[in-house]
Length: 251
Image (cartoon, rainbow, N blue to C red; front, side, top):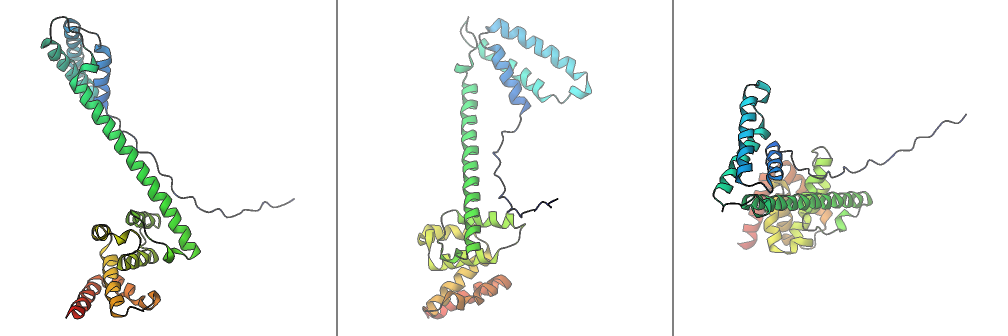
């Protein structure tokens, strides 16, 4: 009899779930009314309105139906359609395709759907880039990699995956890139944006590295490792030191 061997499996990166449209009982109620009302004239809509009012009165007598959002929405929609046809030419029948309110809602729904799809694509991009950076860290080649637009959000994703643990190597990589204007940080606008996206310790580390590099242009990155310790231990002090070195250099 042989003993089955168990091989260790690499943990899979968390899957990015597609954002779902929240269930809206009121929206469902309005859509039901519009489907039913299509082709109705003013008289038919008036009759349907009276029926909805009767149902509302009946529901109000039952405590479990008092908060029926869908029922209230259906009643409100019948009332709106009744007013719409009352103001229209005689013989007009309801058509949701010519209803300005419906068309505006459809346009808003399309825009919201596009926004959700864009959000999903961005989340997938961030997850894929986080996988890439994790692989580069394991290979020991992260330092040779230039950052890209959006890597600030990837940093946050890596921190989330680590259970909130701040990964010093990733922060040091970003700080060095920001100080040396590597990757997308060649663009001044990207550097300005980084001030909003990165943590104070990373920004202080970058500022201190930039001033130390000006003070000693030939210094190796490893020689300046102490800057990360200062920025992590006392962010304010690191910022103050960077500012002092800048003033001394100018004066």
